[in-house]
Length: 68
Image (cartoon, rainbow, N blue to C red; front, side, top):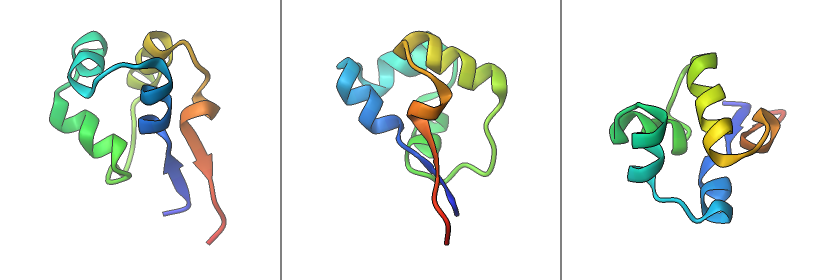
């Protein structure tokens, strides 16, 4: 898929665990893992907004486009 999710990189920079981020965002750890491992087919803007709020970042810090 040409959209790459760099969530793990931003989480490492902010020193936050998957469990803690999932709790703060209000999603399950399983759903966060799916997103983090580039297995998600879609992401809700409300979830993306909550992740950006908690990690103090922009959507472009997390999502990246790669040509195939």
